[in-house]
Length: 309
Image 1 (cartoon, one colour):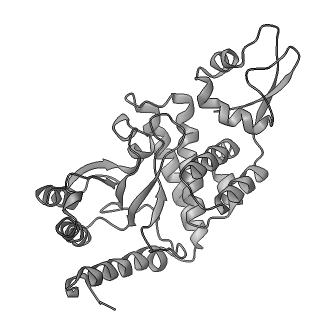
Image 2: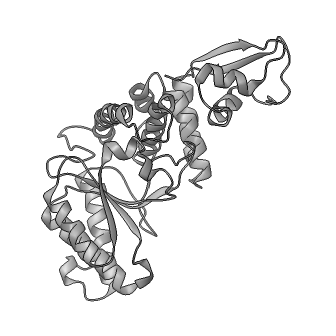
Image 3: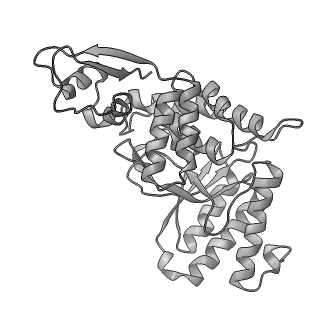
């Protein structure tokens, strides 16, 4: 076992040293349970431009952004470029919470090494700014000089630590989303998409479904259904589907019954009710109406429509 990054003399030793750092950050410092390091630490990211699904972040680290920690990560990526030159030009994102002078220094160093790094804040990332929308995946660090994504609190359980952090992050992210005029995501969907990020993060951090449901009311069920859809598209493990089902069972979805009128077209009903395209809402409608054929609705048919707020 290599005791420090500086002591590593080979790529294998360097990777093992970083693995130990991640273990310390994720398991010991923030008490967030176990993590697999076979390939990457996986973590959910923001919705894509369609507002439906997205891949996952790889290389997500939770640490305070200090000069020392960023210097270590800078060295790591510089050696990565030397070992795998084809990665030059790859875009990475450094998400902070607040201004960070060390982050700007690290970006300068990484740019000189041939790595394209963008600096953004975590709340804006969750609010889905336009420049993040089309990406399939992100490579990101989360943190700040003065704050961290998961705030350590003595005498608190890991779930309580995470749940309290989710409340603060959710409030800040929703405020940023409301003001994000450049977002490609319709305003009505922004909050539930942010909440779906929190559902998937909670699954990774082993937060109890009951705490997620309480945190995300009144959108818990809708957020869980979107999270399940995103997880399936991103090839997450089957257990996440059960987790989302448990959240939905605890906080049943709010629905309104719509009675089909003569000459109704479901896509038009959706557009008039939500101001959204049919395909943005259909995944939620289909879950509430098993077997419903959107092209063959008939007068007096009763359809459950989700309430989104």
